[in-house]
Image (cartoon, rainbow, N blue to C red; front, side, top):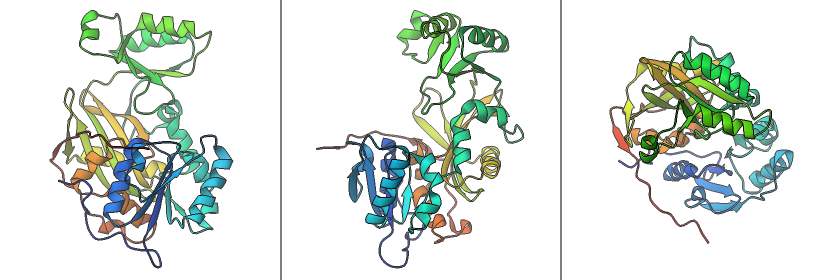
Length: 351
């Protein structure tokens, strides 16, 4: 099935002409959002600081100045949005700064598709603050400690390790960067089997010691070894409109699109708690069959193309809801029960 096939209808227009949507610098997986919107008849502009897969299918490409950031980037983005007659800007880079300037863009007729308000974006980016303030009535929270010294790390390992397997990850990070399961000792078998995500506590202490008296804040946590679910969400002003629950299978590239009311309810409560809108992702993992929150990503997930095999065109409906061209009731219900494997393919990104 073509994941970019329209779930229903056409994108629609604003006043007259073709809807114009801009994706600024973001992850290469943004190409799937570009393709999905183009399949709906939108005109898509994409920008990046260099060659990127996210640019290949855009109707128009822009090269961003690598040195632009902060308020200077916002001013440039506003200038480009007006120049290119953009209706909707979907930020990747500087999403927090752009969210703060939402009114400035709105005054020029440009809407921003951002999943949350600036203060919520800051909270979700800081996993320590996020876990500490997370409402356990939404979903259970894994026991954790924030550590910045070797002594704190050793104490956290002793306390949490007494309850079961543990892991660590940075307080800030994306795509699982820096995640390691903590083991009592390294083994040749684990290395030969291709396990690159485990680290002995002794080796971790040595690495932390070499970085000075203090290191960047890290989380030591209980390791959740059960089923992992990635819930791709479409929301509108704090209301969950639709969700696609992807259950990842250990040791397999196949994911299952589940009909899972419990996971959907977790996403619904999280949406209301954080006032989420547009496209975002909630991740959970089970301990003893009980789902525990991992994170909420205020952006499209890296597996959004898998979720779109359900027939739900996420960027199409997110833009239609944002522009007032559809109501939540009109959004089609995604299919479930599918087993989906992702196949990568090479694309030419230059010159």
